Length: 283
Image (cartoon, rainbow, N blue to C red; front, side):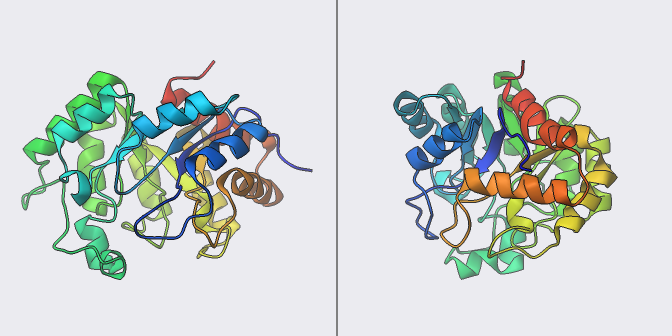
């Protein structure tokens, strides 16, 4: 039996065209398929361009779904750039990601080089571990606009510095936690500690479903149990040409988690209630 995902919100949907990777859907297709599945909302993510204006256009063209955009603080927008973030938020961006593919962490991982992105990579803290002035500015803007600050692909140490400064004052989402293909590959114990600081933990389908999966579904369930369903959101991180389309992939993910022992109520809490609350569209 399939898990009922009516009202779900996927906070991590990739789409094409994309300068780095072939994509399976464009933004309109992703939204139409999510609407057909009964989902409440999607957030369009691009590593390269702000997506709030595109989300506005898709919202006008696709009925039955709320569509939101965001901005990644990568080299294409000037890095951790408060002016770019402020413009995106004024246009309605709901998620601000700290550096992703341009992060120093992904340079050190080798991810950036594989995509032709030059180093040395962006950071949000100085050599002393303290948040940079521009990071503080971005955090203040996100809080002012009631948006979600997502950790992107920054290092584990940067995750904890940001969480200590922001998680009790605003909405902090740990981006695709534990995923092996980008970022710091956080452990379940680190996720639990970040949640204890007030962060939400995003666990994405791509880590255990599809052609790029590196983990077992059981590993994801173990992380959920370590953190607790009340601090977890489920998304896909899908949109890659080699993977399921995001809406279908979210259903496959939910059904796999159910088969591994999670209840439908637990899955709906993480896929529907929690992400909708973060977006400010909860009942």
